[in-house]
Length: 185
Image (tube, rainbow, N blue to C red; front, side, top):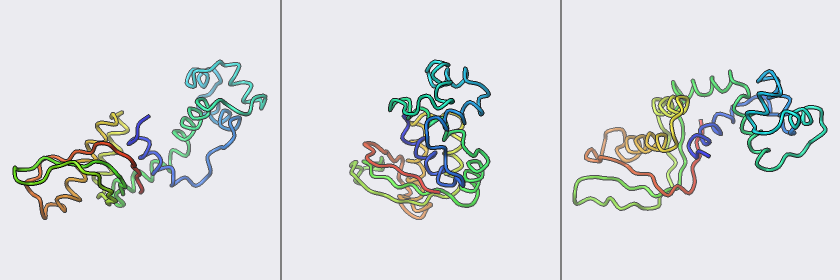
């Protein structure tokens, strides 16, 4: 489960124009169409091909919670790819991305300044280049740690240094103990 990756996905999903299939049988039929067969869906979801077929035929309707979560995640990942791409493109070129987080934030700076980690709640609009970096890194399979690092650099630059207008000596910003994280396009 990746907090940053899921947060970026959730922000993009707000752009969807058609609702994602809700019922498990409808989600299963969608995946079978996308992956061109029940065998591929069974392997991806780690269930039997027979189980997939029973969902497709409406013989099973309620999956176990863990399967329901996997099913929904896989459907959302594939839903409306052009709209997902447009939303990402717009954020990366003109719109930027808003990060809303409640986390322990500290930084390294010259001696004599306070670098104590403390709980802060920040809502910061990040310029398009940071949206681009986050989405590019996510697409290349970056870990949550790497995405967190990009977000921390963005907060350093935009929030703490006010895009170069202050705190020029700031070396590194640390995000730890994240209690809440949300992105918005």
